[in-house]
Length: 210
Image (cartoon, rainbow, N blue to C red; front, side, top):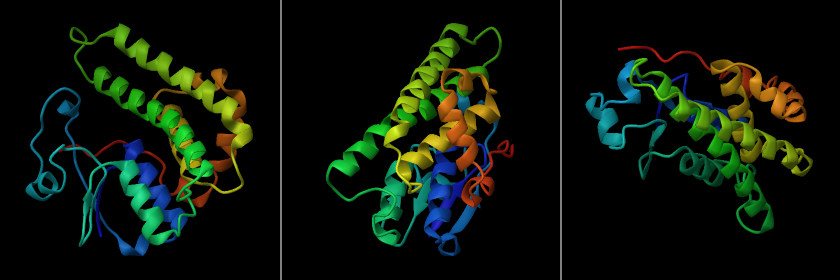
């Protein structure tokens, strides 16, 4: 299987952590993509193989012999089903819906983080500080909601916890520790799971530039 990646993307990190937690890293060819900073506001030209894999031009993208998936949740769901015996996300029932409820909130943070980043890549005269503040406020509301959900976290580092941890880690890396004041118990939880090998091996870094 071929997986298109970049170290700055929380969506990619979510998939890579899932792969490591399932112990299937040796099944993949990881293809490093390179992005100019203009990705935030402009269509960028990418290599033909990447464009063929993901016409929406976003990462991660997974190419297998049977299917091509261009959404991180779809990729994680596929890996969990095909290689994880549904260990990281229940196949059906109440446990699945509870996990998806948590994932939806954590995904909301990831979306806000990326939109905030794209806006910050605009020039000063084009940038909307109101929009940046809106995305920051959305992140903080969602972090607070995830803190309320902490008592429902189980002992397995499942896809809901993976997505939550990736969201916490991205804010720490890209925007600093302000979110921690909104959710101190979540921050303490994150500091613990951040020591997992799958997390330390996927620490974010700036995307290579073309």
